[in-house]
Length: 312
Image: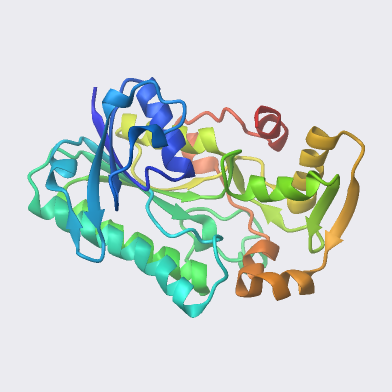
C-alpha cells in the first residue's frame, strides 16, 4: 500500500486521519519537531506501519527519508488559531507556522528525489469574510476572493505558499476547512463545557451561521483526495447543512442534557473583553457551500448537525 506523509500528524485531525489511513492499509510517515512514540496515535493497532521523522522550521530542515519514502503528502501543520489570544506575536506565529512549513515542503520536494504524486494541504474558511460581504447573497464558493482581514490574508498567503507545488508536476488539493466537530479537541469540546453545568451558552445573538464538518468527513475527504486523481484545486471542506450558533448549541444541549438546561446568551461585549480580536471570528456569520466536492462524488457520512452530534 502507498505511504502518506502527514505534517501535523499528532494533532486532533492528524491523529484521526492516521487511524483511518491505517485501517485502510496505508503506511504513514509523521513529521514532528521531536520524534514521538507510536502510542501518541490513540487506539492504533498498526504501530508497525507508522514511521516518525524530524523536521525543524527554524533550521529549515526536514529528514529527506520522510520525503523519499512517501507517495502522498497531507499538510496539516500550523499553530492553532483559537489556542491563544491574538497578540501581534501570536498572529505572526499563526501566519509563519503555515507559510514557512509550506516553503520547507516545496524546497524539499525540489531537492529530494521522490515519488510524491499529490499534496493535499489544509486551508480554512477564514479565507471568506462575513456573509454580508458576499454580494451574491448565496453561500461562499471557492472562486470568492479572500477577505481583507487577518484570517483572510493569512489564508491567502498560506495557499500562495503551497501553490508552487504545481510547478513540480504534483497534483495539488487545498481543503478550506470549516469548524471541525470532534470529541478530542476544538470547538465542540468548548461548546460542551457549559453544558456540564446544564447551561446552553449561546454566543452573541446566536444567529451567526457556522459552517462545520464532522472530523470523520474531513479526514475522509483527505483520503478521497488521495485516492481520486480527478480531485484537484481548491475545495470547501464543510458539511452541506450549515447551522446557526443557537441551533448548534441547542441541538447539543438536547443530546447532552435532554430538556433540563438553562439557555443563556453571552453578550458580544463580554466576548470581546475575554477574547479580544478573536471575538470577531466567534461572532462572524459565514455560510460556505459544499457543492463542489459533492459534485465530484464525495458522499457525506454526517451531512446534518443532528447526525453528527448523535455520532459524537
